[in-house]
Image 1: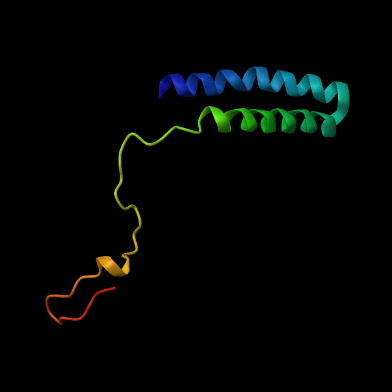
Image 2: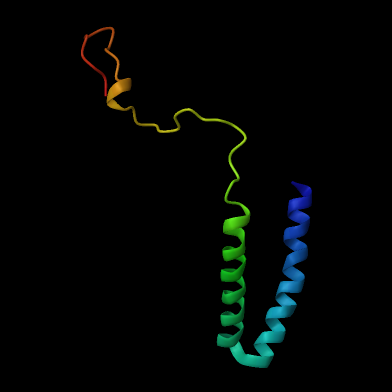
Length: 82
């Protein structure tokens, strides 16, 4: 967790310097366009790279809502519980 926080805050420095340079060179709209294009490019690269990533823990049923096949009869009333 410490390394994660370290890289996060180290990234703020170069990112703010780059934004400042783009802001002074092309204005606010130009800086936002460049940063938006960089974020879209990073997302387009990340999708195929992480396509096969799965959770290490298998969760059989994460839904908090029971399905019809999982309904059981109540012990007191004998009626099916939702």
